[in-house]
Length: 385
Image 1 (cartoon, rainbow, N blue to C red):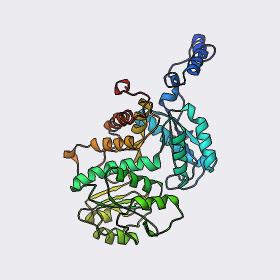
Image 2: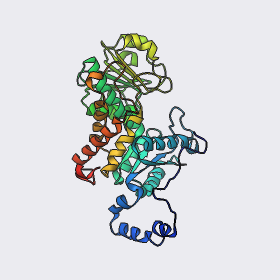
Image 3: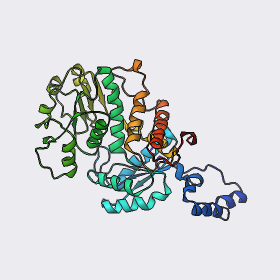
Image 4: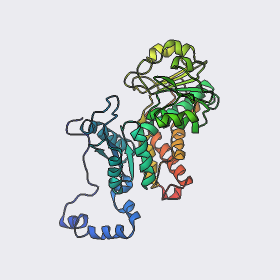
């Protein structure tokens, strides 16, 4: 499967004659170029821009492998591109950059942007990933989406909405502890707060992020201001007491059985460290109501492939200029809605990635949110096929 790579270029229209050649290339292509030169928006109609995204990485935070460099990151980016095509019909081009310089990455992506309808940032180390995405979103007129942050957050919210239904709990009333305050943890926190969560605490190796401490990391200082309303302090074993929800985007085996015993009744545990979760699901089973992991060999897999194909499909179909918070929330709710409430159970809170309803639900919800929030070039759902 990997020999020679996973992708190739194919033609929509075969070139079988001189007439075909003259239309595809010179001289016939000149008219197409002139049309776009006169109206730049026609690039969406007359080129691959309308259905193509770039999957861009610097290879500094690849899966569980870390900083392995651009060449070694290519198989992951190829795989991502393959998933875009398989699940949503989106053409994607893997691009791995041989630089770790923030300004250089921003400049390169901006220079490449006219070719693409969207940019998927992938496996870029924190905190550089925050700056790169923020700048590119502000300076480009196409969607820029860091999947490690937002894709994870969207699928977590989708799963949590259904898990809370199973446990008959309200997101506004539960205590949520997020272990791991990197790119994914911060993005998950923001998504859950936007969805109505109130009592949310982030925990790192040194304990709960709180307003009594000083942090060199600017993102942690900001995080402390909008989380942990009771300013709880101490290690995970302390702040998890009475928690209804544990979300782990951290390290293997950091969650203990005693921690589960100290959680509230019917606890929800999303242990998403890969390949080894924060606690073994079999060990946790007697103590939790709903368990989810990032692995495919256990029920309730939290997998970004549930999100990124559909969210880009919707963004491309309405020719969006951004993927904003409204679109992300719409995507999470769409994923959640695939499972009928009557079907929900402790082992079925998240749909299968191969469920054909997932991409279509997300696509329509995201396009509608884009239109409603004013970031769609096509400003009517009637125009969106």
